[in-house]
Length: 215
Image (spheres, rainbow, N blue to C red):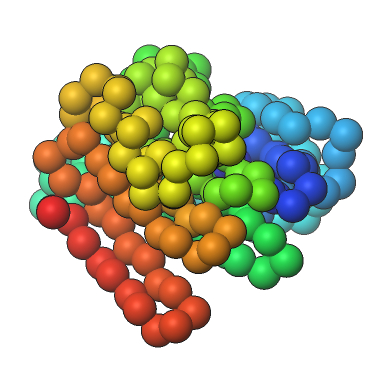
């Protein structure tokens, strides 16, 4: 698992990669942000720090990994497991400012040691005073395009609204590679994508909510 969190008010951030036992990766990313002088911890070092901080862990055999999917390939639920492995979790909160948090299990059939866009500040996750952004899709394309940071930059330097900036950035990425969920300081929400569909949801303070897959 990989995860990242960023506070748009302070620009503080924390990220983790290569987790196999930590139950809530975003909680660990937040502890990295709040209790260390660093931004990014990975693999054995991140796991050791999680145990040191008393975060909840679980037996790795319960996690969805290539090895476990192979082990369950003949099982009745194997197809559902493989579908779940694609999933990402992303969330926003608007309290004293903006914040973004993103976590993922990564691509199916990825190479061992591969790190995607999620924990890369400015690529899969970014927040400042203009907006908070989490990206989803093919991590390599998102990293190359610094997608999350570009949305904020277009808003800041070109004066576009969140929806205009998000659509502009997503349209410039290769087809079927990129989607994002973002919120602005004014409470505007944008969820554009250039893929066939994107699992997405939002809720606002005025009672509006949306849960969608297709257009």
